[in-house]
Length: 175
Image (cartoon, rainbow, N blue to C red; front, side, top):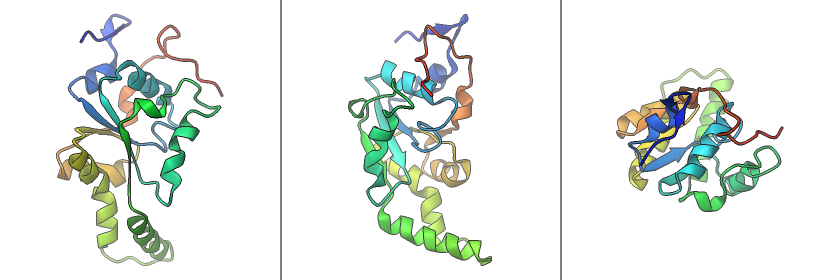
């Protein structure tokens, strides 16, 4: 596969993701709401032969709205549902348990890390490993990187893709 050249060099996103054939993408703050979201959308659309997964902490049915949000008025050139292998989301029970612990912490409880917090912080790495995903792109270093390291999943923050937007290559971001 020949990688596109941008300003005399291969684009960073292409270089970083070239060795990976199954990629996990966080939704909130990464595919949706990050300055580099259009760049990531473009990558997904240009590499349909790769297996792209949305891996999200959304639960309680909210994971089902990711595609309508992604293709809404904000990102008209975003990938479609068909561009993804699927959505992996944390269970409603795990979400509930962590929410309870976080409420206690907000009220001043300063105990050791709980099992619910540990499960939350390692869930994306574990889910990626189970699905055969080799790299996770996520903006939440604190809640994701530890799990990726534990399960041998490469972790990339979306800021690693910073490169100039070029009108002939990147879709127009509609605000």
